[in-house]
Length: 128
Image (cartoon, rainbow, N blue to C red):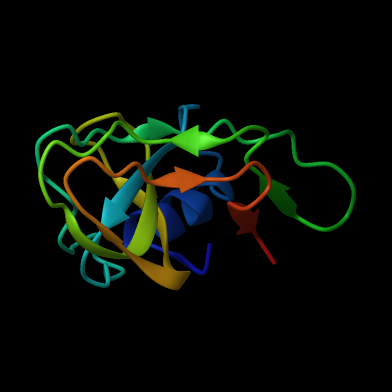
C-alpha cells in the first residue's frame, strides 16, 4: 500500500502523544477512481459488492511490512462493477475510516458474474 490518509497520519502522530488508537480489523475496499488522502474516492457499489477482511499476517523483523496470509476473494459481481483501479484499507466493513490507499499494479474490469481476488501474499502493506 502506498499512502496513509490524513486520518491515519493524525492517529499515528497522536500515538506519540500517548493518545491511544483502538485496534481494528482491516477491510479491503475496491475503487474505480484514485482515492485521496482525505479518504475520498469512488468505491465500488454494484450489486454483490462488500469489503473483505484483509487477514494480514503479523509484522515481524525490521522490514516494517506485512501481507495477506490467505486469498482475499470478493463476492461474485451481480452486475458490472466497472474497472477497479485502486484499493484501500478501512477500519470497518462499511462506513468507517480509510487508513491507506494504493493503485493496483494492473487495472481490472469486473463484469457481471466476475470475481475479484487478491492472491495470498499479494497485498503488501509497508510502513517505512
